[in-house]
Length: 261
Figure 1 (cartoon, rainbow, N blue to C red):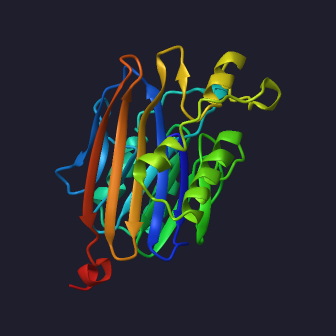
Figure 2 (tube, rainbow, N blue to C red):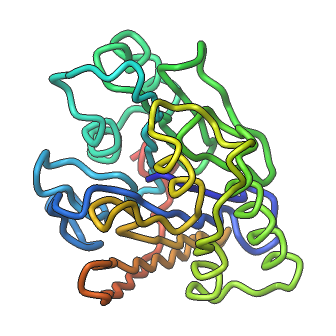
């Protein structure tokens, strides 16, 4: 994932509201949102076998974004998509899981990792020290550390806040509100190692760089305090100019009762 706006535990009806875009090379194969054999819902990276965002009916959630640092490009044997998959398939609580990942975090290319259960949402990056437990509120995450105020991230948080204020939670509307193709002026662009032309194109919310890299998925996740969860994914084929929608819904099991039984 490359642009997330989310509201955690800060609404009377919804425990978690998330709108996410995933950017990737168009030639990298992936499967749409689905129920995995191990019991969670997520899309699938068909090259490395991991995923970028998913949720388990136990109430376990995870998502990852890449940290863009093309100046220090290296090859790593471990896949960042496994960080999401392994959490969703496991039984460790979020903090304990991140404490284990923290020991080996430099064995992965740059990442930002969010993991949650019914009791808490946590953040870990291998570009900043420590594990952070997130309090109630609206957050944004892109290809830098949490809450880095890139204009597209600020717009994404504003879009989410406007929908919450209007009590409007239609998934497609939330999603489209994070699809701006507007780019930033050259003088405020970050220097992540891309060319100036690429940095400009990457500053949009909905990205297309040379028709070989860009936004390939958008996902909305709505998790109510009642336990009801709705997920909608739109998978884009920007070359063909088409898209595929997938929707799933399920009820979160009582995690505390599960652990006691």
